[in-house]
Image 1 (cartoon, rainbow, N blue to C red):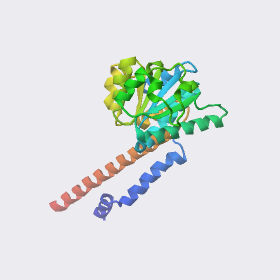
Image 2 (image 1 turned 120 degrees about the horizontal axis):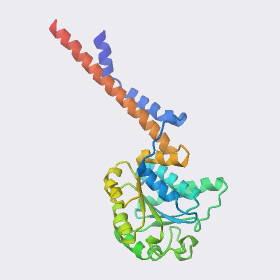
Image 3 (image 1 turned 45 degrees about the vertical axis):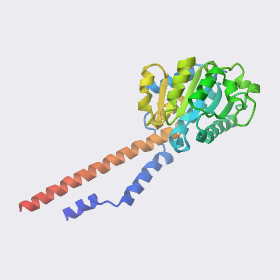
Image 4 (image 1 turned 90 degrees about the vertical axis):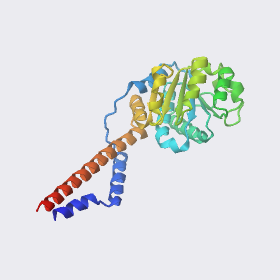
Amino acid sequence: MKIKIINKFLSIDRRIIYVLVAVVILIPIIKPLNLPVQVTKEVLGVYNEIDKLPPGSKILVAFDYEPASTPEMDPMAKALIRHCFRKHLKVVGISYLEQARGNAQNVLSFITDEFQRQGYSLKYGEDYAYMGFKPGTSGMIIMLCRNFKGTCNTDYLGNDVYTMPILKGISSLGDFPYLAVLHDDSMINAWITYGHEIVGIKIGALCTAIMAPGIYANLSAGQLTGIVGGLKGGSEYEKLLGYRGLATIGMDSQTLIHFLIIIFILIGNFAYLAKEHHLRKERLR
Protein backbone atom coordinates (compact mmCIF):
# COMPACT_ATOMS: atom_id res chain seq x y z
CA MET A 1 0.00 0.00 0.00
CA LYS A 2 2.79 2.40 0.93
CA ILE A 3 4.71 1.82 -2.32
CA LYS A 4 1.53 2.48 -4.33
CA ILE A 5 1.12 5.89 -2.69
CA ILE A 6 4.79 6.71 -3.37
CA ASN A 7 4.44 5.72 -7.03
CA LYS A 8 1.40 7.97 -7.38
CA PHE A 9 3.50 10.92 -6.21
CA LEU A 10 6.25 9.96 -8.67
CA SER A 11 3.83 9.76 -11.60
CA ILE A 12 1.56 12.78 -11.13
CA ASP A 13 -0.43 13.45 -14.29
CA ARG A 14 1.12 16.47 -16.06
CA ARG A 15 -2.37 17.84 -16.65
CA ILE A 16 -2.74 18.30 -12.90
CA ILE A 17 0.47 20.34 -12.91
CA TYR A 18 -0.84 22.49 -15.80
CA VAL A 19 -4.08 23.17 -13.92
CA LEU A 20 -2.22 24.11 -10.74
CA VAL A 21 0.06 26.48 -12.68
CA ALA A 22 -2.98 28.12 -14.30
CA VAL A 23 -4.67 28.54 -10.91
CA VAL A 24 -1.51 30.05 -9.40
CA ILE A 25 -1.27 32.55 -12.27
CA LEU A 26 -4.92 33.56 -11.95
CA ILE A 27 -4.98 34.06 -8.17
CA PRO A 28 -3.15 37.44 -8.14
CA ILE A 29 -5.24 38.63 -11.10
CA ILE A 30 -8.53 37.81 -9.34
CA LYS A 31 -7.40 38.84 -5.85
CA PRO A 32 -4.20 40.90 -5.53
CA LEU A 33 -1.79 39.47 -2.96
CA ASN A 34 -0.07 42.78 -2.17
CA LEU A 35 3.28 41.08 -1.74
CA PRO A 36 6.03 43.50 -0.65
CA VAL A 37 8.16 45.12 -3.35
CA GLN A 38 11.63 46.36 -2.43
CA VAL A 39 12.89 49.19 -4.64
CA THR A 40 16.53 48.86 -5.71
CA LYS A 41 19.02 51.67 -6.36
CA GLU A 42 19.22 50.68 -10.04
CA VAL A 43 15.54 51.46 -10.60
CA LEU A 44 15.81 54.61 -8.50
CA GLY A 45 18.60 55.72 -10.82
CA VAL A 46 16.10 55.98 -13.68
CA TYR A 47 13.15 57.21 -11.63
CA ASN A 48 15.03 60.00 -9.85
CA GLU A 49 16.59 61.39 -13.04
CA ILE A 50 13.16 61.74 -14.62
CA ASP A 51 11.48 62.93 -11.44
CA LYS A 52 13.86 65.87 -10.99
CA LEU A 53 13.37 67.24 -14.52
CA PRO A 54 11.46 70.53 -14.48
CA PRO A 55 7.96 70.62 -16.04
CA GLY A 56 8.07 71.16 -19.79
CA SER A 57 11.34 69.28 -20.25
CA LYS A 58 11.54 67.04 -23.30
CA ILE A 59 12.50 63.41 -22.85
CA LEU A 60 13.41 61.04 -25.67
CA VAL A 61 12.08 57.47 -25.38
CA ALA A 62 13.53 54.78 -27.65
CA PHE A 63 11.08 51.92 -28.22
CA ASP A 64 13.51 49.19 -29.25
CA TYR A 65 11.78 45.95 -28.32
CA GLU A 66 9.98 43.34 -30.41
CA PRO A 67 6.30 42.35 -30.04
CA ALA A 68 7.37 39.04 -28.47
CA SER A 69 8.71 40.98 -25.47
CA THR A 70 5.55 43.04 -24.84
CA PRO A 71 4.35 41.02 -21.78
CA GLU A 72 7.59 41.91 -20.02
CA MET A 73 8.27 45.34 -21.54
CA ASP A 74 4.85 47.01 -21.89
CA PRO A 75 4.19 47.35 -18.12
CA MET A 76 7.45 49.22 -17.54
CA ALA A 77 6.95 51.27 -20.72
CA LYS A 78 3.52 52.36 -19.50
CA ALA A 79 4.90 53.17 -16.06
CA LEU A 80 7.63 55.30 -17.65
CA ILE A 81 5.25 57.29 -19.88
CA ARG A 82 2.78 57.66 -17.01
CA HIS A 83 5.59 59.09 -14.86
CA CYS A 84 6.57 61.56 -17.60
CA PHE A 85 3.03 62.87 -18.02
CA ARG A 86 2.51 63.16 -14.27
CA LYS A 87 5.60 65.39 -14.17
CA HIS A 88 4.27 67.39 -17.15
CA LEU A 89 7.21 66.33 -19.33
CA LYS A 90 7.00 66.23 -23.11
CA VAL A 91 7.64 62.78 -24.60
CA VAL A 92 9.27 62.19 -27.98
CA GLY A 93 9.32 58.55 -29.09
CA ILE A 94 11.55 56.94 -31.70
CA SER A 95 12.43 53.39 -32.84
CA TYR A 96 15.40 51.87 -34.63
CA LEU A 97 13.49 48.55 -34.82
CA GLU A 98 10.75 48.35 -37.43
CA GLN A 99 8.73 45.78 -35.47
CA ALA A 100 8.61 48.17 -32.49
CA ARG A 101 6.33 50.69 -34.17
CA GLY A 102 3.17 48.94 -33.02
CA ASN A 103 4.48 48.65 -29.46
CA ALA A 104 5.21 52.38 -29.29
CA GLN A 105 1.85 53.37 -30.74
CA ASN A 106 -0.04 51.02 -28.40
CA VAL A 107 1.74 52.26 -25.26
CA LEU A 108 1.44 55.95 -26.16
CA SER A 109 -2.22 55.58 -27.13
CA PHE A 110 -3.04 53.66 -23.95
CA ILE A 111 -1.46 56.22 -21.61
CA THR A 112 -2.65 59.33 -23.46
CA ASP A 113 -6.23 57.97 -23.50
CA GLU A 114 -5.96 57.23 -19.79
CA PHE A 115 -4.81 60.77 -18.98
CA GLN A 116 -7.42 62.36 -21.21
CA ARG A 117 -10.15 60.39 -19.41
CA GLN A 118 -8.80 61.88 -16.18
CA GLY A 119 -9.20 65.38 -17.57
CA TYR A 120 -5.68 66.07 -18.79
CA SER A 121 -5.35 67.86 -22.12
CA LEU A 122 -2.59 66.14 -24.07
CA LYS A 123 -2.05 67.28 -27.64
CA TYR A 124 -0.10 65.33 -30.21
CA GLY A 125 2.79 67.40 -31.53
CA GLU A 126 2.84 69.59 -28.42
CA ASP A 127 2.89 67.25 -25.42
CA TYR A 128 3.97 64.03 -27.11
CA ALA A 129 5.03 62.76 -30.52
CA TYR A 130 6.36 59.62 -32.15
CA MET A 131 9.01 59.85 -34.85
CA GLY A 132 8.42 56.26 -35.92
CA PHE A 133 10.97 53.81 -37.29
CA LYS A 134 14.29 55.28 -38.38
CA PRO A 135 16.66 52.82 -40.11
CA GLY A 136 20.41 52.79 -39.81
CA THR A 137 21.03 51.77 -36.17
CA SER A 138 24.46 53.22 -35.23
CA GLY A 139 24.57 55.52 -38.26
CA MET A 140 21.13 56.81 -37.41
CA ILE A 141 22.21 57.66 -33.85
CA ILE A 142 25.29 59.52 -35.13
CA MET A 143 23.07 61.55 -37.45
CA LEU A 144 20.66 62.30 -34.58
CA CYS A 145 23.62 63.68 -32.65
CA ARG A 146 24.42 66.02 -35.55
CA ASN A 147 20.97 67.00 -36.79
CA PHE A 148 17.93 65.53 -35.04
CA LYS A 149 15.23 67.10 -37.21
CA GLY A 150 17.16 66.57 -40.43
CA THR A 151 17.54 62.87 -39.63
CA CYS A 152 13.86 62.39 -38.78
CA ASN A 153 12.32 64.79 -41.37
CA THR A 154 8.81 63.49 -40.62
CA ASP A 155 7.07 61.66 -37.79
CA TYR A 156 5.25 58.34 -38.20
CA LEU A 157 2.13 60.18 -39.38
CA GLY A 158 4.06 62.03 -42.07
CA ASN A 159 4.01 65.40 -40.30
CA ASP A 160 6.90 67.78 -40.95
CA VAL A 161 9.03 67.74 -37.78
CA TYR A 162 10.20 71.31 -38.42
CA THR A 163 6.67 72.58 -37.73
CA MET A 164 6.07 70.51 -34.55
CA PRO A 165 6.05 72.66 -31.37
CA ILE A 166 7.42 69.78 -29.27
CA LEU A 167 10.69 69.84 -31.23
CA LYS A 168 11.22 73.57 -30.94
CA GLY A 169 14.75 74.13 -29.65
CA ILE A 170 15.82 70.57 -30.47
CA SER A 171 18.65 70.49 -33.01
CA SER A 172 20.72 67.60 -31.66
CA LEU A 173 20.26 64.47 -29.58
CA GLY A 174 22.20 66.28 -26.88
CA ASP A 175 19.40 68.85 -26.50
CA PHE A 176 17.30 66.23 -24.73
CA PRO A 177 18.09 66.16 -20.99
CA TYR A 178 17.35 62.42 -20.80
CA LEU A 179 17.04 59.33 -22.98
CA ALA A 180 15.11 56.25 -21.82
CA VAL A 181 15.86 53.15 -23.90
CA LEU A 182 13.29 50.33 -23.83
CA HIS A 183 15.11 47.36 -25.32
CA ASP A 184 15.27 43.58 -25.50
CA ASP A 185 18.60 43.28 -27.33
CA SER A 186 22.05 44.89 -27.39
CA MET A 187 20.94 48.11 -29.14
CA ILE A 188 21.54 49.94 -25.86
CA ASN A 189 25.27 49.67 -26.62
CA ALA A 190 24.88 51.83 -29.74
CA TRP A 191 22.94 54.47 -27.82
CA ILE A 192 25.72 54.49 -25.19
CA THR A 193 28.61 54.52 -27.68
CA TYR A 194 27.23 57.08 -30.11
CA GLY A 195 24.79 58.95 -27.89
CA HIS A 196 26.27 59.23 -24.43
CA GLU A 197 29.90 59.37 -25.55
CA ILE A 198 29.41 61.89 -28.37
CA VAL A 199 26.91 64.38 -26.91
CA GLY A 200 26.86 63.32 -23.25
CA ILE A 201 23.15 62.58 -23.04
CA LYS A 202 22.08 60.81 -19.84
CA ILE A 203 20.65 57.35 -20.50
CA GLY A 204 18.40 55.03 -18.52
CA ALA A 205 17.98 51.39 -19.56
CA LEU A 206 14.61 49.62 -19.30
CA CYS A 207 15.08 46.07 -20.54
CA THR A 208 14.11 42.43 -20.36
CA ALA A 209 15.47 40.53 -17.37
CA ILE A 210 17.85 38.51 -19.54
CA MET A 211 19.51 41.70 -20.87
CA ALA A 212 20.03 43.41 -17.50
CA PRO A 213 23.15 41.52 -16.26
CA GLY A 214 25.08 42.42 -19.42
CA ILE A 215 24.80 46.20 -18.90
CA TYR A 216 25.75 46.48 -15.23
CA ALA A 217 29.31 47.26 -16.36
CA ASN A 218 27.94 50.32 -18.19
CA LEU A 219 26.10 51.35 -15.04
CA SER A 220 29.29 51.05 -12.98
CA ALA A 221 31.16 53.09 -15.59
CA GLY A 222 28.65 55.92 -15.28
CA GLN A 223 27.32 55.47 -18.82
CA LEU A 224 23.84 54.68 -17.47
CA THR A 225 21.97 56.37 -14.65
CA GLY A 226 20.03 53.22 -13.80
CA ILE A 227 18.52 49.93 -14.97
CA VAL A 228 14.90 48.77 -14.84
CA GLY A 229 15.13 45.05 -15.52
CA GLY A 230 12.20 42.77 -16.34
CA LEU A 231 8.95 42.46 -14.40
CA LYS A 232 10.83 42.91 -11.13
CA GLY A 233 12.12 46.31 -12.22
CA GLY A 234 8.71 47.21 -13.62
CA SER A 235 7.01 46.37 -10.33
CA GLU A 236 9.52 48.58 -8.49
CA TYR A 237 8.77 51.47 -10.84
CA GLU A 238 5.04 50.97 -10.28
CA LYS A 239 5.58 51.08 -6.52
CA LEU A 240 7.46 54.37 -6.85
CA LEU A 241 4.47 55.75 -8.77
CA GLY A 242 2.07 54.50 -6.10
CA TYR A 243 0.04 51.88 -7.95
CA ARG A 244 0.00 48.14 -8.58
CA GLY A 245 -0.10 47.39 -12.29
CA LEU A 246 0.58 44.46 -14.59
CA ALA A 247 4.25 44.22 -13.59
CA THR A 248 3.35 43.85 -9.91
CA ILE A 249 0.62 41.33 -10.69
CA GLY A 250 3.08 39.42 -12.87
CA MET A 251 5.62 39.33 -10.04
CA ASP A 252 2.96 38.02 -7.64
CA SER A 253 2.15 35.21 -10.08
CA GLN A 254 5.85 34.53 -10.63
CA THR A 255 6.44 34.28 -6.89
CA LEU A 256 3.59 31.78 -6.44
CA ILE A 257 4.83 29.69 -9.37
CA HIS A 258 8.30 29.55 -7.81
CA PHE A 259 6.77 28.27 -4.57
CA LEU A 260 4.78 25.70 -6.55
CA ILE A 261 7.92 24.51 -8.32
CA ILE A 262 9.75 24.18 -4.99
CA ILE A 263 6.85 22.12 -3.62
CA PHE A 264 6.95 19.76 -6.61
CA ILE A 265 10.73 19.42 -6.28
CA LEU A 266 10.37 18.52 -2.61
CA ILE A 267 7.55 16.04 -3.33
CA GLY A 268 9.59 14.39 -6.08
CA ASN A 269 12.73 14.09 -3.98
CA PHE A 270 10.96 12.84 -0.84
CA ALA A 271 8.97 10.32 -2.87
CA TYR A 272 12.13 9.11 -4.62
CA LEU A 273 14.02 8.74 -1.33
CA ALA A 274 11.05 6.98 0.27
CA LYS A 275 10.86 4.53 -2.64
CA GLU A 276 14.60 3.82 -2.46
CA HIS A 277 14.33 3.27 1.29
CA HIS A 278 11.38 0.89 0.79
CA LEU A 279 13.20 -1.10 -1.93
CA ARG A 280 16.34 -1.31 0.23
CA LYS A 281 14.32 -2.78 3.09
CA GLU A 282 12.71 -5.27 0.70
CA ARG A 283 16.12 -6.42 -0.54
CA LEU A 284 17.37 -6.98 3.03
CA ARG A 285 14.50 -9.29 3.91
